[in-house]
Amino acid sequence: MRSKGRQSLVLILGLVAVVAVTAGLIAVSRQTALLKSMEHWTSDWRTALLADQAQSQHPRTAVIVVDDETMHGYPYRSPIDRGLLARLIETLDAAGARVIGLDFVFDQPTEPEKDRRLIAAIRKAGDKVVIGTLDARVPLRPDQREFQNRFVRETGAATGFVNLRYEIDNVVRGEAEADNLTGSAAGEFTSFASAIARKAGVVMPSSDARIAWLKSPRDGSDVFLMLPAAQIVAPANDSERKLTELLLTSLKDRVVLIGGDLSDQADRHLTPLAKLGEGLMPGVVIHTQAVSQKLDGRRLSLLNPEWEVALVLFFSGCGMLAGLRWKASHWTTSTIPIVLLALCDAIFFAGLRTIVPFATPALAWICSVFIGRWLRWIS
Image (cartoon, rainbow, N blue to C red; front, top):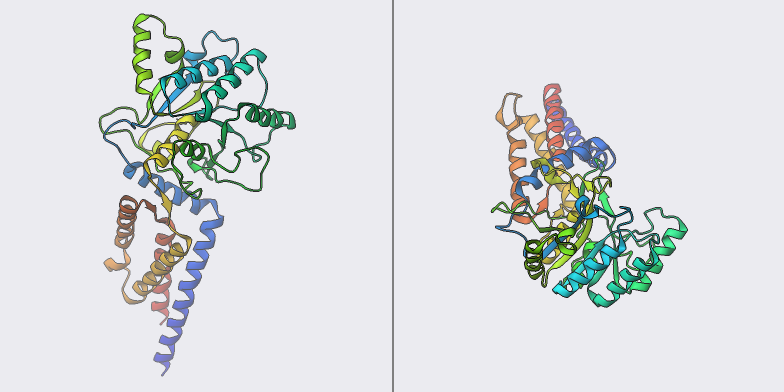
């Protein structure tokens, strides 16, 4: 009787421990930096190794970069010369670009004539221009906010917020989600990439905020056609002009994003692809990654929270049974189940483009195995 009573007690304690481990780890994973960082670290490696990889360069997008070479000879570098931006828009519009995205902040006046020319160029381009804006989550002075809103109204262009979403480790893994509590400017409830994709005729759910990254193509080319703005508006000689004409021909019907990549401006960011040595990525390229994902219909999502709880509960329960049944040296209580979890994670990512938590289920297994061994010992 005593033995059966002790076994029943052990079973009850084991069930309580399984629930406690599951609830505790789920709560900790939501609130503490350590577990969040562990999950991000493992998911970043899966993303870097298993991200989509095309055979060649993305055919529907291009990036025009305003870099140090482009700004050589201009009297100021910030804000970007709006006469230059006007010429870029005029040139791309004439070349037949399908959509033109401006990844710049328009929160203050510059030279009045150049401001007017830029507004005129955007209006002339018609319905194909999307302007990046800063929504109310970004602290602008009232005069800056008013100028941005007025600039948008005068151009008549579509807008989308250019906010990026930084995780706890300062890595950008997706777009910032729409925040309907921060209304002050047109387009605030649509991300920059979503607004551009919509102009191109593609609508995706706003909840698709995780970026499905593209790795460098198999043929060794750049992910996107990348052109310095100077090549477009100021070719140096006849041979450069011929090259520019050829490049402009290739931009017909493409979605083109224009953005800055200046050495003295902090618009480069860590992404999961940095795990493979990609380095910091310019903001305009991150937006282009998000745009290309929407154009292609690719997705990358996190496991549904309810399924995450079920997964952690499953590993906690299995760990408890393993700890109660087998000795410490048995293969079932070793690291083999964790290796199998890693393989399952890779399969889910590769097949379903779903990021399955790794650190929390693995810790649930380890904690439950040790608790099960202790309960086995006292029984």
